[in-house]
Image (tube, rainbow, N blue to C red):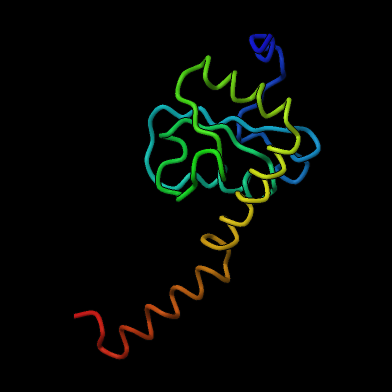
Length: 130
């Protein structure tokens, strides 16, 4: 029964060493209900190849697609069901992990960000943004 998932140990995100997380957590949950800005820890989890179940608020603004890069669930029961489904499907976990990592590499890596800034500066220097 998915309700047994509450017995798993939890930690505050500020206490986590993200380098050991892949060996500890087959699935991560980001159950944010309010917030703003980019969720760096969520992107860290995705970059580490850990499939993420998040609320819509938690995934807001990062460009992740539900069911491809992340699993969106907005109620406690839906979150528990999503985690249980992922734990039962290693293939789906691998697919979401791979897609999420690719998203982070394409949109949030230093190289990607640097390329966008370079393009912006080139446009500005050419007088293109009036």
